[in-house]
Length: 406
Ligand SMILES: [Fe+2]
Ligand SMILES: [Fe+2]
Image 1 (tube, helix red, strand yellow):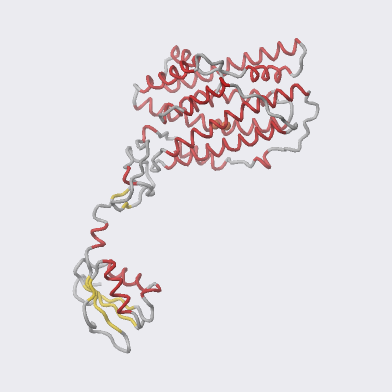
Image 2: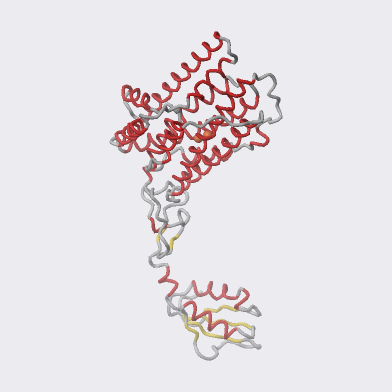
């Protein structure tokens, strides 16, 4: 089509402007520069009235009278293109690159726009608390999200709820119920924290947003299966200690994305990996074995992101190790006057591993729980060293971790 002169033509035939005809007019005008002219022809009886209104709305001018070129009962009208479309997109910017890596800083003005979209100026800002890549990112996040999406399981079918509890002694069953009661309150904290981080994250970092959403969904299933296992023998549930809840409350109050992820996922969920393996290995019934086996698979992803993200930030900014250290010390100081772990949970773990009340079995159970605590400590030190702490500092920080495990 030539670039000038009134020879540009959009023929609507019988089509009304109010039934899709505006698309043909807009498409033809999009190829013109402001001031160029378009002849619109058509046979719809209201074409002139509708086109006049449409032009006013979109900043174009409809010339008076008929344009030449009509015939055969058709109307021909002349539209002079205005500059509103061009002005509208004048200040527009791309919100990064959809297929590429996210930007180091996400503009609040991009709002909810998709990564890579052309963003019209003037929309509401997103007001996200975390809008810098280094503060939320890990290179493994896209792969972890894909793995999480592929690994979602259905609590109704993944666990054989009809499997008989069989010969589980009554007091061992009470121990299982106490442990499950404790697990549920920990899982609830572990659900709320990623949900809170997610709500304050700039959506430009969409893989992290997606990963946190799957993490919250994982925890929702853990809350469900541990509750169902606790109720399997008819209830009631066990106890919830003030010290245990105080320990979890400090996690909810942690204001920073990375320190929250560090305390929850690296130290807390990292410790829980060993705890869930322990309960699985000493499970007195198939349902307890199933629910802990399923949960520990999910937890491994949560720990992997926490470790990868914290290491990512600590490598970009070595001084950040001091902030991580301070977060552990602060939490330890806050919890100094609390008992930490619910004593009934500790005793239940001993009884679970013992399997009976004979003194020899209880000694074995007690030593197994002590070994578990050593494994938990080793795991924490290993992860702290990976993040960048020297071995002696890693040992110190691991020792300051809450007695509540999470
Ligand atoms: Fe969990
Ligand atoms: Fe988790």
